Structures are given as C-alpha cells and as structure tokens.
Length: 224
Image (cartoon, rainbow, N blue to C red; front, side, top):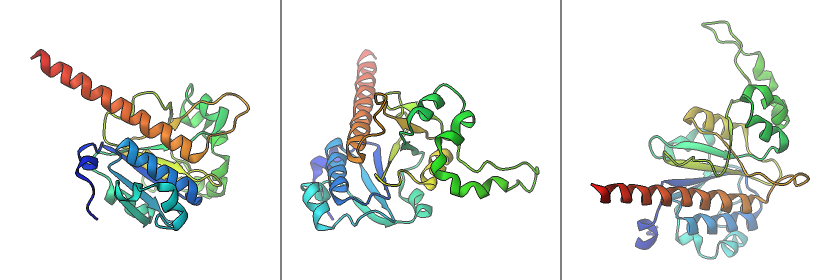
C-alpha cells in the first residue's frame, strides 16, 4: 500500500505494538491515535482482533490508510519489524505495586506486581547450566513514569488488551531491548485506564518528547 507523503514526512521514530487487543472499537481508536501521533508503524500480535474487521475500520476513521499496519505476528518475529536499537516500553499500570516499584528495585516488588503471571512460576526452577544459579522467572523491567524521558532511542510502545493486560512475552522483549514499563499514575480507587485512552496518552507524550528534542537540536545548531 502507498501511504500519503505528508504522513511519511511527519513519521516519528515511534512504533506501536498491540498485545492481545480483542475489542474492535478500542483497536480502531488506537489506530486513529497512532496515525494522528505520527507512528511509523503498528504491529499486531496474534490474539488481536483483525485490523480489517468492519468495526475496527469504522472506529479507525481512515487510519488504516495513514499508517502501516502489520497483522497477526508471533512474538518471536516482532523484533524483525523493529528498527535497529529500538527500545520496547510496556504500558503496564499494575496499581500501587507498580508505584512502589518506582521507588524500589524491580526484584523487591516484582512478584507482588505480577500475580497475573504466577502460572509461569515453573520457570523459577530453571538453572543456568554454567553457573548453577537459578534463573529469574520474571523479566525485571523497571517502572518509570510515562512523562519521564523514554525517547532517547527509537521507541516501541506495547499496549495490552482490557481483559488480560500485557503478556509475559512483551515484558521479555522490553527487558531484552533495555526498555521499561510506563506507568500513567491515576488517583487511588481507579484501577486503570481504557486501553485506547492509555495508548493515546503515551503516543502523544512520545510525540511531545520528540518535538522538544528536535527544537533543542535546532536551537543548538543555530548557535554554531
């Protein structure tokens, strides 16, 4: 598909990965935000609703023809679609545990924060064949606030579905690329944000950070 030159001109080193998003209205809204923010690409992992399903198309309001979308990817193939040196960040509001994790090491509160991954606990028993040390069963992706700088390198943001949230594979990819979890703080008593709203906040925050960097770079050049 050929995309508008204006869209390609305004494309940012910012990529979106949809992780098990099953609601067509949410996915269409997210695609619309991705196109509006200037995402370079949108990747959909297996388990997501089909991007070309009629309800997704309706909610996308033309976004499908503004930003490249790659459908139905296995997690093991996702790195093949990322630009070099991309860091993967996971939108992961896991409540007060995540906020506590911002103050302490990931290992201190990771188990409490990730009760949803207890079914993978069997991996805790694996040992490193060379050292004999036990391997951690959970990726240690630290938490940072969404408005702290996370666009110093090309960035990919993972948004999980409403029902199951982000996957273990997304956290493993974040850890392997040097990325982190991005926390959007909410007031006590509010569990989380809608997936589409969280995606919009993060994508336009990334756009804001990249714009400020470009302005600073332009200003520095004008001084020389």
